[in-house]
Each structure stands twice: as C-alpha cells, then as structure tokens.
Image 1 (cartoon, rainbow, N blue to C red):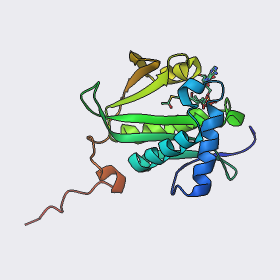
Image 2: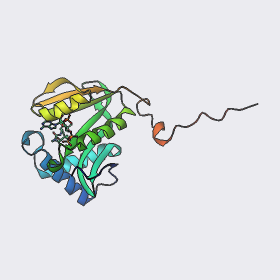
Image 3: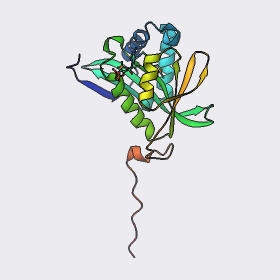
Image 4: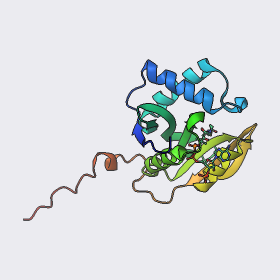
Length: 184
Ligand code: ACO
C-alpha cells in the first residue's frame, strides 16, 4: 500500500458504481462506531446523494491505483445557525478501513481546506463525541471544540488565509484583470 500512489481528485460524476463504492467505504470506515455512521446502507445512499447535490464542487476523492479509497465533502455555502452566517462545512470525511493510517486522510484534508479557504473564513464540522481519533486529527488542523448537541461535538476552524471574499468565484476562473486602462 505504502508504495502505491495516492491521487486526490474532484469527483466528476456520481454514477451507480461510484455511489456503491462510496457507500462501502462509508459503511466500512465507521465499523465499530455504529452510532456515528452506521445507520445502514439506505441511509448512506440518501446521505451521499444529498452531499453530492449540496456540495459537488467540494467533493474530493482519494484514489489508489484506480480504486477509490476515501473521500471528503466540503461545502462552501453552509448556513450555520450557530455562527449565524454562511461558513464552510465538512459534511463527510472517511477513508476505507483497509487504507486508514497511511496518510490518505491528511491528503484529503489538505485538499478540502485549500478549497474552503478560497471561500470561507470559518469551517464547521460535527464529530461523534467518542471519536477521539478523528477529534485529534481535526485538532492538528486547528479545529477547536466549541459546543455539543447530543452525541455530536461541534468543531470550528478559523481559516488563516482568505484569498477571496466569500462566494467570490473570480479566483476559480482566473482573476479578471482590471479593464484595460485607457491611455488617452
Ligand atoms: N486512533 C488514533 N489516531 C487516529 C485514529 C485512531 N483510531 N483515527 C484517526 N486518527 C488520526 C491520528 O490523529 C493520526 O495522526 P498522525 O498522522 O499524526 O499519526 C491520523 O488520524 C492518521 O492520518 P491519516 O492516515 O492521514 O488518516 P486516515 O487516512 O486514517 O483518515 C479518518 C482519517 C478520515 C479520520 C479515518 O480514520 C476514518 O475514516 N475514520 C472513520 C470515519 C470518521 O471518523 N470520519 C470523521 C467523522 S467526522 C466528519 O465526517 C465531519
């Protein structure tokens, strides 16, 4: 595994085969943590479809050879009622159990944060309170625990560099130059 190359890509389309693979990763990824992600395959299917419709520009996958090994879903247009404004959100982040602990999560997180930093000054996520592995992972990226609702802990990260104002898509398409100055 360690010899193999990991590629991070934007998911281009959610066809049936891809959806099935993502469901499998989701189900296996949360093995042993049923309360945080084990609601079953039909829930996973609906949830992943919702993620795709809500945040397709920030849906990144990790590929090892041609196999999808994990994914992260980053939403740059999430109204947080806790923050009272639009923030970035990480809706889902999971690596296939077989591939965990080899740095794929770090690669996905770097890609996801680089994406959200272009749009949002804050990023919010919710994680299971006993999911210490993920919580310590997030803390390494500057996320802090700021609240709790039931079994879910809310974590927030302040983005350091903001290259664009929220929802300013100009960086995406290449910054438009100021209109040519007239030399009269
Ligand atoms: N025990 C110890 N450390 C853990 C554990 C664990 N059970 N799980 C994750 N980690 C952390 C450590 O901080 C470790 O840090 P290090 O690199 O300094 O040693 C790091 O994960 C390992 O990094 P990677 O190998 O890059 O991470 P991986 O590829 O395993 O992906 C992920 C991390 C996505 C959290 C993976 O463990 C996973 O899929 N877990 C199950 C699903 C999950 O909990 N997802 C997050 C839910 S919250 C949400 O989606 C918003």
